[in-house]
Image (cartoon, rainbow, N blue to C red; front, side):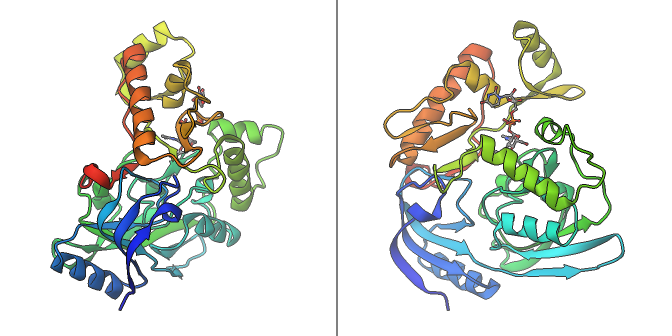
Length: 344
Ligand code: EPU
């Protein structure tokens, strides 16, 4: 049976370092632990929050129910052939450690996702992505506890309905608790080096002999240059999604702002939210508690004991500015929980 703690500070359990507390807290190391914890919360009529690494969450206040941290570990190779293999990972495994582990074994597919904080179980929720790769490119399927039926089920990649920073799990919050995730990794597929930062990094090198570990190291170097380390300066990575707008709107914005940054596709475009925020003069802004990172305008940081509300207020001011200057609506990327917003 899991140990149940009462009145637990969540400060070291969320990468924004928000000093919220949970009325009850437990760590689940197995599917049975999960079932017990959920059954107990249901019997008390308490809300539950499933927590991974807490790296994509904003606590708007205290959480008055049960927080369950998923600590299910395990790494297992399956279906190994000369070209590829399936790697099954427990939901509580730290994502970055698994990236290095797979790359060291010579398998390709994870390397561009190095240094993304958080756990394996949280990764499919927002379909983590960076440097031209998304989790959905390699994920085969996952095992989850479906809270509506109490059954452990398998969801295929397609059933997870992945798109840019989006999945089934964002549309049915709380329904599924991810237990294990399976990925197909390749020994031979081309390394993905097209993203501008990686192109620049390798510009004077022969890239034909690169290993997945070399690419992971490059991604780590690029990220360390641009993004704050949550252990040094608390943050949740990009605070906003890059908004996707129709092609017509992109062209008219581009006419008015020729240096507008983004990723145009056929009939739509992803605008670089960082560029919009930067143009509004927010980059490097700080008040006495929270601010905008000085090297990447998409990242809000907690300088000194800021509350979730401090961060959300800053985010609102930024959104209003971007909306009135560019007519583009920014959407917040992390989940907001606790306080009056519980259930959002
Ligand atoms: N830019 C600015 N000002 C800034 C930062 C960037 O004008 O302060 C402009 C530059 O023109 C730059 C462009 O925005 O070329 C794009 O910036 P960057 O390459 O840093 O990527 P991004 O679109 O801002 C996305 C992801 C990151 C991911 C990088 C690399 C989202 C919301 N963010 O950022 O993901 O690491 O691409 O692939 O899609 C995260 O989700 O937490 C995250 C860090």
